[in-house]
Structures are given as structure tokens and as C-alpha cells.
Image 1 (cartoon, rainbow over the protein chains, first blue to last red):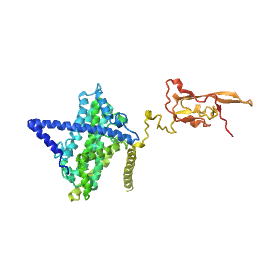
Image 2: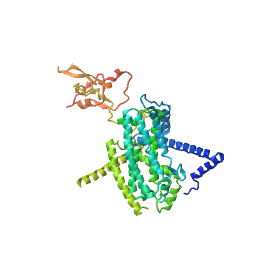
Image 3: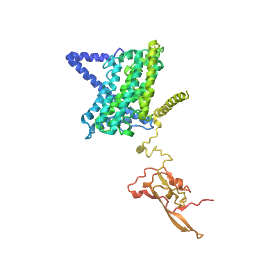
Image 4: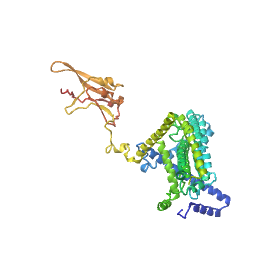
Length: 361
Length: 160
């Protein structure tokens, strides 16, 4: 890196000044609190940007303008919506299972926050450098479906239950091909740690140096990731034209807001994993042999690279959402079990063969 | 073998059609200034563009001599699916002593009209057309019942 100043210097300074003031236990505790606040701020900022971006992208793709009344170019529309949700009563119908009904949005939101823990945003800018980082993300992000099932079951509503069941079937199916396409990179890289996966891409992103199989795995991962976040064209769990709003039909106020926020955080998590595993994380784009170009690329800060890649994949997902019609449930399962899963298993075999023969760069 | 080729062809064509759709939305996305939304209340007196084919109401055009083309044949009244049109005709006596049916009142109830334009298709004289006017709301329902022929208007005879 060209910059001698790194984020780890800031964290080291905070750690030193805190441990000068209090005992090691309290230092650790206050560092956890600080990290939690930082994550919440990051997520809220990302959600605000994403909701605004989604509306504008949708508007432009449908020959509309999008939000344009509140603030300049409608930029305050998101805040207006959030305040409206905060002021609304979180209403629970009489016959719902009160405990599960109130617990489901919190569980869903907490799980999507947990999945953000091992993501690396820049050199040293990482909450938890676990040696099983990617495995942890894939494991934790599939807990979210339990929250969705809880929401659907406790609502005592046939639409909610149908939406939740569809969501369960969908996530259980698409986890497989999403996981297998990540396994393709892990087989070549030889590590599950996020920082080591990023470090292994210093001489080229896996999409480029992994030959055709990794490109194929990337395409499969984007399709399966779109399905895992329950977004159109795989939004069968919500399917507003069939199921009103699916599993969150009965939710209102900030409980609905939590589900809404969760959708965007899940999208961010999927995009961050895709950016980390396939597109080199926070590493800049280098073309081998063009030193001047590479030096210019190095001057762009690492978090700009990371969030640029994340937003590129999020834009892809939004592009899919506003172009493709929704799949039927049988078409959805057919796509996964008859096309994506066999193809990714064949892909894994090819990747393993390439890795054993040492043909990748 | 033939079915296998067919299968692969279908998969490739499916992907091709998906990419076509993506390219179309990308084209729209990259040209946001070409969208078709009107900023209506602000631009109602400036840049508003109502397309010529917009069906706002039925009109009976008159020429400069206050003549229309309606012969009071009531085909439009019969074509109308929801009884919007009421043709009131009068019988007059021409100079050579013949009795002739002429239009007295072309009563049009805008509140019941669905702009299906079946009256316009039915008219053998092309006497009525659709106009692209809008902002037609009024405070009293009776004001929606309009008499389309102007007072003192006459039938425009065919030159032949």
C-alpha cells in the first residue's frame, strides 16, 4: 500500500488510550460497544443510501423519475419514511403468538448483523479475523430463515405462512449452489479466512485468474445470492400480487421496518461476500504489466474499492429485480435443483482438477 | 440427440432473451432525462405534453359556419355500452315538402363515459371524435351532462 497511514493505527491508538484509563476487562467491553456502534452506523448509512438508490434505479429503469419531492432530488424521502414508520404503532392482531411475533423481526435483524462480523472493509479494518470467516458468514446467514418462518407461523395468517414456507424452501435450496460456488474459490485459495482470501488475490482477482470455472461460479453465486435475499425475480416469499406481503403481512410500524432493513443488510452481506471472494475485496484493480496504471489505481483508497465493488453487485441485483418477472415456485425449485446445483457440482469437480494439477495462477 | 440439441438451444435462447431485457432496462437507466413522466401541477401551463391519441372526452366538431356532420342516425347511441349518449332528434319540413329528421340535441353524459370509443367507430359520418382534453372535473354532477351541438348549428350537407 502507498499510504503509510492505516486504519489499524487508529484502532491501536483507541486501544492504547482506553487501556490507559481503565482495566483490561472494561477496555474490552468499551471496545465492543464502540465496534457495535460503528457497525450500526455503517448499516444505517448503507440502508439509507440503498433505499434511495433502489427507488431511483427503479424509477429510471421504468421511465420514471423516482422520489423527487422531499428535499433535493427526493434525497430526504428515506428519512421521511423512517420517521413515519417510527411514529406508527407496532400493531399485533389478537390471535397471533405474541412472543414469536415480537421476537421474529429482532432475530432476523440480529442474524443479518452477525453476518457482517468477519467482513474486511480495508487493510486492518475488520471486526473479527476468524480463520473460518466465510464458513461463518454462510452458516449465520441461513439462520435468518428461522426468523422468517417464525414471523410467518406466529402471524396466524395463511398468506404469511405460505410466504414463510416458500422462503424456507427457497433458502434451503439456494444455499447449496451459493455455498458450492464459494467452495470453488476456497478450493483454489486453500483458506477460509477472509483476510487470507483477500491476500491471495493481490496478483489478480479470482474472477480473472481462476479461469472460466470461477467466472461461472461467480454467475451462479450472483443468481443464488439474489434468491437468498428474497428479492425479485425470486421474491416468492413476499410476492405482493399473490400473498399481499408474504411473511410480513401482519407487521406494521418499526417491526415492518426491521424486516425492510434486514432485506437491505442481507443484500449488502451477499454483495460483500461476493466482492471479497470473487472481486478481490479491498484490493485495487491491477493489470499485469501496466505499472503506471497500477500506481494510479493504488492511490484510490481501499474502502472506496471495497464499497465500489459492493455497490456494483448491488446494482446488478437491482437491475435483475426491475427487469425480470417473478418465477413460479415450481420454476424456482426446478432452476435450482435441475440446473444450478448439477452445474455447480460439475464446476466444483473441474475446479478441483485444475487445483490439483496446479493450472491456476 | 435431437432433443439434446433442442435442450441446449432453449437454454442459450433463454439466456439471450434475459440479456435482451437487461439491455433494454440499462438503456432506459442510462437516459433518465428521456423519461415520459410529466411534472403535472407545475408544468400545466408550460411544457406539458398530452399525446394526440389520449382519449379525454367525445366532441362533435363544428366547422366555421357552425355546421356539424351528425345526421341523428343514433348508431352511436346504440353502440354505447353504458348509455352515455342520448340523441334527441327533431323532424323538420324542407322546402320541397319532405319531412326530414335532424339533430336537435346531442346529449353526452361524461360521468358515465368510459372512453371506449365505440361510438366513434360506429359513426358512419365521422361526425364525432375523441379529444385529448383533461382536467374535466366539475363540482356538480349535472354539469357533466353536456349538449355537444352548438345552438343554431346545422347539418353539413355532403358535396356530391
